[in-house]
Length: 129
Image (cartoon, rainbow, N blue to C red; front, side, top):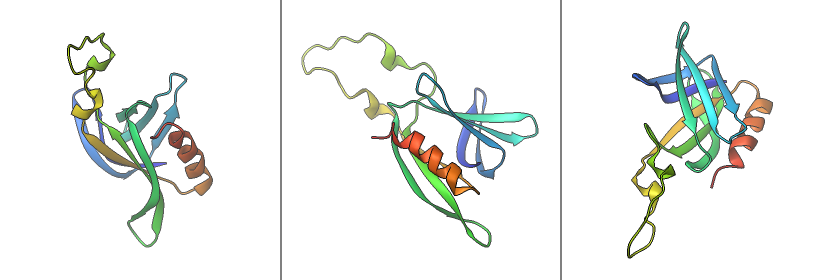
């Protein structure tokens, strides 16, 4: 798998284009995790929770001689402490939309093997809205 988009680690964020190796996991608690080796033995990550995953769209990246099969993954970005897990009390109008303060971000996964693309797409699609 190749990764494109903005990825980060605690003190570093960077934009990568068709970076390989990139590894994808769907962990038992439901989160989707991508690890990108952007320099030898240096990694960037993206964690996507099922509740922030907005959509997954198939397409292509046009780079080089031929289009590369790609998934566009859009999610709401959460960094730092997730205060939506706190116990909140509302007076009056009821609960506000907790996710409305978050910004959408899109990253891209590209594949040489369309069978792998189909498996990753099926895993992501079950959590998208």
